[in-house]
Image 1 (cartoon, rainbow, N blue to C red):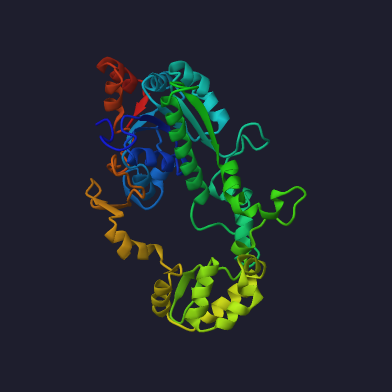
Image 2: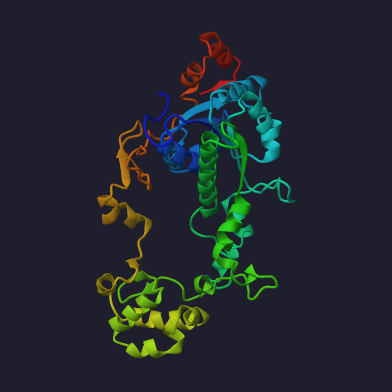
Length: 404
């Protein structure tokens, strides 16, 4: 089967040479939105195939989820014949995306000049750790490395007693993956529109480090936005040690009283109008300048009622707040159930549950495809669609170029 039949990216063919999480997260979005994503793996397969819990041979839970809706080919890309297969597939592809370091993809003979020679309309996306031209360009990178290098781990240390800390999510991988997805879609749009570049492909670079540096510094540039700096590169509200879930009488609550209207509503709610006359609480500027004291006083008040009492009061006052949910809680969350967020389907592994597509399109809705495929399951089907003869396919199989 040649991919999704519906969705805003229906008809787009993607050659996906990514692995682990950053690239596969980007191409999962393409598949969910209707693109035909052909995942080209090494004979050993994507690392996450073996990442516990493993649900079936070569089908780790993360792999099954993040590679849903894709087709798998297992090709020995180090062989001349394997490279030739990819270049032939590229002739009819719209997108080529990989997550190897620049030197590695060049050694395989699959860099942009090679793909452009096969198809000058192709969108070629490089997703890797560090951008070309800098001293880090050939450094290996994973999520933890980039969280540390981008300033995020240092900022987390402000909330964890001074020692640097990682966010409990592979946020660098996923932010870079999202960035790669929108960059490719923008390039596809530019290729289709009239004017300069119409009908032309191009090369895209999405480095994790630069992507996360931009992500972190969106709010943290602060005083360093001017030269010379007017203050430190740090947004004090989000690094205040007392910025954390508030303890209630029976649990914890997430609370964000942000603008002046919300603070006035809160003062009325707790029966302390004198707070509204305190200069420290008067404006966003004064609250930010005294954020540690403000959050400390707020925490003392929140501890006096139960979570449900506060939630009822905050809902009435239209103050943003939610109980603190665990990842287990999300599986049974009433809102996610009502919106149909969790996707449940039968598979060869038995019943499976996966996160749904968070975006909705009124005219061209996406669709979640089958769970991540077995290694090399689509070798023959993809090659037959590309015009390879039965003898050619048999020759590639006998030579060990195709695996699975």
